[in-house]
Length: 315
Image 1 (cartoon, rainbow, N blue to C red):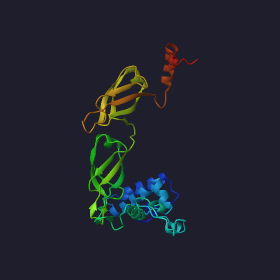
Image 2: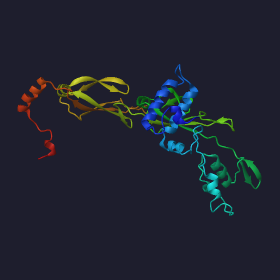
Image 3: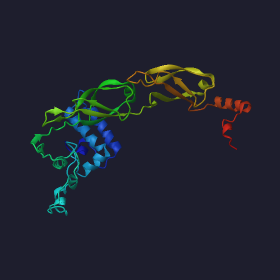
Image 4: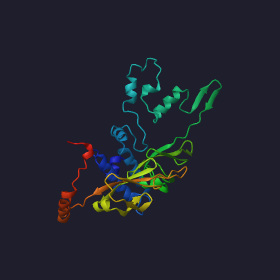
């Protein structure tokens, strides 16, 4: 893969908002499901965004420590020179994995970890009985996926495109929360020397909703009502995660009054029990108060003055 900045068409000084905007614009244009889509181009776009949207990966790439094609760390530029000039080099000091500053993801760390564990780079371990082949474990591939609020709460079966361009069919269980990890067996990257594929492990981030929020199995919403609906009561439509329902507002309701819609919360996938939805009423005055309302209030307050802060004992 080429330079991620070049792929997204942004400058190296671009901020997170610019990077995200560039990714969305290109993703909409080249998504494989579209008629004008381009799977290879989309794969490069998502790979570039995966690096530049992660501050840690971005910093490593900017320092030349991250390979954009594999997403793996590179050995530092002074790797061998720095060690050969160190006090340990050439003095018969037994080197260790830590001497080389490697991480578990690069070829050097793999080699020296094997050496420390009595296993050579060819995958053989030394034993008294002789050499025995050490089976390599097929690694999982980790992904991150953003899921709309309603899809995460109700659950859905959908076809998604992962960050490397891989398209998979997956089931998102009802009640899925941010941080949930879903495993797709055999859907990871191909391990070429084994001819096998690992699992895809997908970590979910649930997107915020415009007006719903969630706590456990319960859904919460602030509901604006008019002054006359609060005073006289009314039957109004209220949004739920299942669609709109009719809710009766009692007379003399106030801002902060909470009503409950039983069984309109999040379903629990294991036992199918439902949470509730809680509606917090918020009285909203009209954006522009006309002269008629002003005159009414002036007349009304002369005989109906009250102090809503009386219980606070403010003097």
